[in-house]
Image 1 (spheres, rainbow, N blue to C red):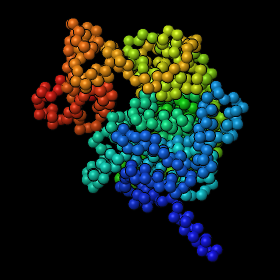
Image 2: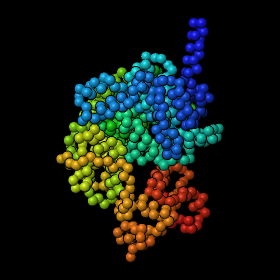
Image 3: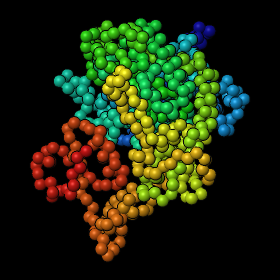
Image 4: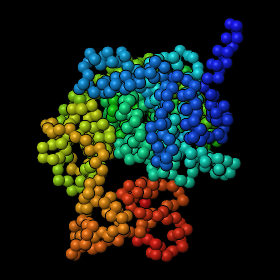
Length: 599
């Protein structure tokens, strides 16, 4: 009977074991020429949740095209049972105005390091979603000292894809072109409906559904100490990039975070090298300047980036050593240097190779967070202490009576969605005081950037910037903002949910929402041709403006400018049609359009 009981217990345990990725997807993860459907990824994480008490999966919202946006929380069962408590610990450590140093010390001893790993925001960079599937399964099924440390000391938030729509688009295109000359190419369509590759330039304006979900449901709730964002780079680049970053580093990113990113990146590079992986580059290629690519580092947490060498979607490539990049910023792909200590020797490179590197990087990031748990939490509190103590400037003030109230509203909504506190001033304007936990974020977006004068060598030509060199919202939006040396008084206010005003003033951005709303209702619109103001009622001397028939040119090559223009037109309620080459060649466009927009 005892043997039978043991056998029955073993059978029950086996039946309840998390399913292997191969059993769910029908092929080993990372097999050549295999890609994943988002619905299967979602159902796999649901299956893991059903079979393990170490994982919880939640749908946080819908993607731009309506697919489920999910995240998984992985930790020891006793941690998962008290998630609300850990959210409260993170909230209190993030605001030293409500937490004393003694309380923070106790919370650091009690809390867990929160680590979020986000995958495949760029949908042709498919490997990290595959890695997410396999790593989650391993973490739930393999009993190792490092995995035990991770489960006991961290709360691991895993986002299998920041771009579910793009995953399905790339998967469908790849399967369609298998065995053709187009195998492994990017699809002839933006892999995010509106922004394409720029979906990873949205972390300061928060325009897209996926960005807003990630910020409102994850970043602003969990305040991760580490956000590791997993990318791929060119086929002939280093096999993997990890921080330290190249200069310049945005000056409003706290120095503690910069040193933490240096430490974390080099620790990951050490673990990869010890595992026999070559071609690891640090302090190369990527700077840390614009908040358009980073959110958490302006909110007290490290941003870790890895960039793996790509394949042709899931098709293997062969890269001889002599083809490896020699002109990359800060390193030579064929030479041994301190920041590229063991160059890759060249040869075949597969999707599975990328996954193997990333599995090691995932584990190293989480293990280092686990063993540095208390220090991460203490430093998280110290960073926010330094933010609250900022006195120069004391505040940024937005005076009343601005030319474009809609732009002011948009600027304030952008700041508030990033957890920036806004106050009313006695004269009816707004103030953003710097004595608050996210003052560095507000300051980075409101002050005029001064990109440093970096030269290729002393007296030589400028070093080419990696990306955008300025991101000043007042200049981008046409809003008057002033830095002041005295704190502005007034109550704290919220602008969330206010939406566009009812204005029909020609200078007010919000007027276009209202004008298009009137047109859609079938009613006429009049305009003062001197002031630009609109009216829903006829006025003497004003001109009736018919609803324009707008055509938006779309070429065979997907362009982000076209996608962003579509987003703008739809956001303001304009009716438009996409116009492609055959229609233009056919002529007679005046019969159908009043204006053609060429982005």
